[in-house]
Length: 381
Length: 133
Image 1: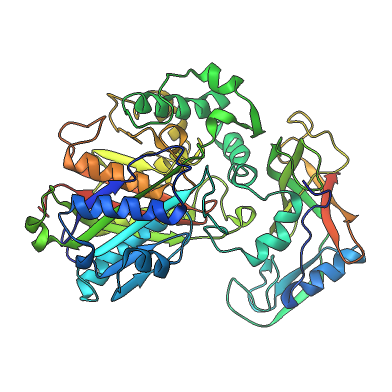
Image 2: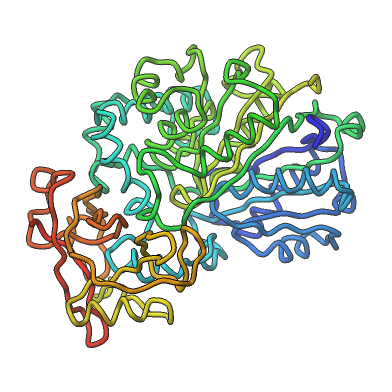
């Protein structure tokens, strides 16, 4: 597919984020969708493709009054929205539809109209993991980390630094759930959740949503916002079972998705001005930086502790505050994409001056799936 | 919080495994084409796709590959408890709890030797668990 031939022309989050008990989950989808449609200068009737995760895409289309000619219900966890961007770009390119709406809404905190799990139950998880008490993300996602810590001599205070740096970014974002600065001591003294993970190393649980609108880049001039071009993308999956991850220090899904995205975009790591790595837990940016190839295996802990990803650092990462401090409804990928769009439009609260290329990388399940989107604010190859 | 942990519901491809634990055998599968030892159970080899596979009794020896110690209440399990991954002598990894051991980082040392122990949790289900060797 030709680089930059598809653009994001509409992007918005729900009007409120955090605790939204007066809205059902479908309402959150619709609130975000209507905001994005307005942002794109469109009407609902202009939308002919609908994608969502964690919810039946047909219900979202029906709720909005759309009879779509293209649907995507890929639901592989929090990175599903990255995959939707990829699939939507391919579908538009193939002529299956013209204008795609991707929605996310999740009543993670208030549980208003949130039925069932946003990811399909796994046969083997039921038999070979859940009986041992591995039933919710904090009891599953951190399982590989002690292996990583031993193999690469990563220290707990380096893990804690991930949370500290995220909070520095969150302090620059008025919509962040948590803004007050924290220290590594704060993190290491916070409540033990699942050793070695403490409360401040775990993501938030909030309500919210977001939506994106994609169309052909040649139509972007018809829309009021500065277009954000899809320069390249990748996706992959490894296993729904954290215990069956091949290498506990590296995600095969991350490596495959990242490699393909960089190749498709025709960029190298020095070209990246801004990076989002889905941070459901504090180890995710460490694995992400290494598996995407920004640093060598075992180097990310020092790279973050040395300040490279913090405000003013050489590689700004998770500039909205991330899932650790900004918001995390359950499937955070949409918010990472929204921040990538804001940075490329030049309107982010913690704007990186002169940023032209943003890489947005998401995880689904517990290192189960991955999606990577390379965005650009210009259509130069 | 219920007082019973979630129990596995065996399926056709896993029946041999759960029948094995009931009689004190940890059963793995081996591919007769490429010699791969694999778990979880499947009727074909996930390495090469061959359907020529055999069930065999594993040694029950493993090492502690990684773990967390959960402080979160869970059905039928009293926190804090370790959720661990044992690396079997034959190669595959398997999730388990570590029994007959303090549930502390000091007692749970990575790469320490483990051996399988069978924990009967209902008339139908016996879980494969591990303890320090």
